[in-house]
Amino acid sequence: MQTESSCKFICNSHLIFIFAVHIDTLKRTVNMKNFTCVQDIGNLKSALDEAFEIKKDRFKYVELGRNKTLMMIFFNSSLRTRLSTQKAALNLGMNVIVLDINQGAWKLETERGVIMDGDKPEHLLEAIPVMGCYCDVIGVRSFARFENKEYDYNEVILNQFIQYSGRPVFSMEAATRHPLQSFADLITIEEYKKTARPKVVMTWAPHPRPLPQAVPNSFAEWMNATDYDFVITHPEGYELDPKFVGNARVEYDQMKALEGADFVYAKSWAAYTGDNYGQVLSKDRAWTVDKQQMAVTNNAYFMHCLPVRRNMIVSDDVIESPQSIVIPEAANREISATVVLKRLIEGL
Ligand code: CP
Image 1 (spheres, rainbow, N blue to C red):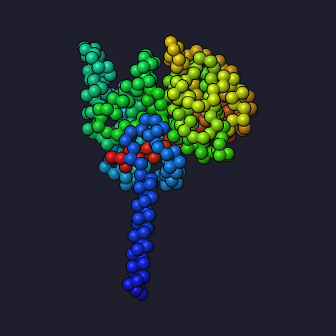
Image 2 (spheres, rainbow, N blue to C red):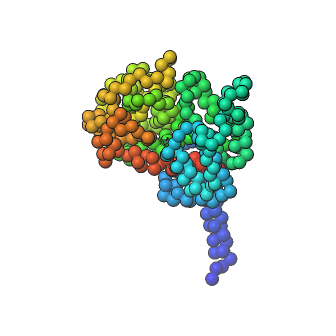
Image 3 (cartoon, protein in one colour):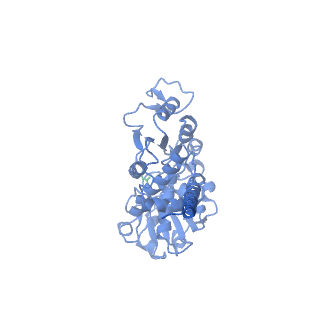
């Protein structure tokens, strides 16, 4: 039988419990307005804690997105971003609308001041607020065009969505960054690292076509936000924007850079500096990550964001080896997207 005092105790302890849960929720609630770079995620430890919590139970917040709609806008192709972000939205109970701008939508003019007498019947500046009318959160994929460095590095398309959609916007890879990928990369390194401060080496690798700097810029930005030993290696002429390189060590001798590495992160990118912006300066397959590169590492894990060109960026042997973690890395895209969408919904 409960006495009055035991009842009071139960009530008080119940209140304390509710208060503790509320405090815990408050601690974990990060009202994210937009997500375009590492600063938007705030404290990395808390973001990682949330990622691992969601990985244990990815439907834990399935009620959070009820009657909320995610709109995903693709100006460029995708496999992982499209599928993982859609899955993340489903984890949160959201509805999802996907629009491929180049397949079925009106051709969009993106420049102001243009006399629209050509083949583009709609302007992005009307299209964006219209899209915002039909959803609660917008994801945008819009790569660098390599026509004008200033245009690319000012993130004109992404920023127009932020300015005119009236909705929280997140990058699904923009001209200069790919933060959902970098967050997934960080989660993967945290899962696989064997020392508190692993050596992570990002190496340039050859590719037949010029690729944007978004993934390497972003990876560097996120690695610089950790206390890892972070090294970048590339041939001369492939220097990245110093803003992203930050305090990372840059080593032009790939084999020297890879010595003792715990993680090898391969990526191709086009030249950034001067008149070479957007150019392929080298296709030197001596930079392809092969067994001889991996042999000088500390039995490193191999990472790549995918899609990857085999035997240009990495040999069959390396990508198929037990040290290759490209699939778990891709799987973590669902987790990074779930954390980001959760935080964007919490900020609505
Ligand atoms: N890594 C990545 O963003 O893959 P997709 O281009 O296929 O989305």
